[in-house]
Image (cartoon, rainbow, N blue to C red; front, side, top):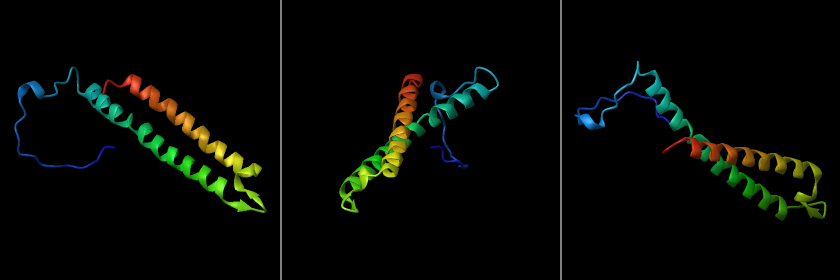
Length: 102
């Protein structure tokens, strides 16, 4: 994530570490922003993975009407939506890791 803010630093950066723009700086700015945003699928994947694991665990262990919650159609449908989100987010993670050299 990018913390948006302004800090005042009193430092000197060695010449070999300075970012030199090839053009007006727009390309460099876009590069920096896009690369940091490529981390979002990874963060999302962790959240979705935990949601999916907890939902499955809860639905298998909770009994309603003499049978487990997971046996109901609507519950299975909601679980499948979480699994779909997990699959899509996994694909985003795979693409991001191949595109980014970081």
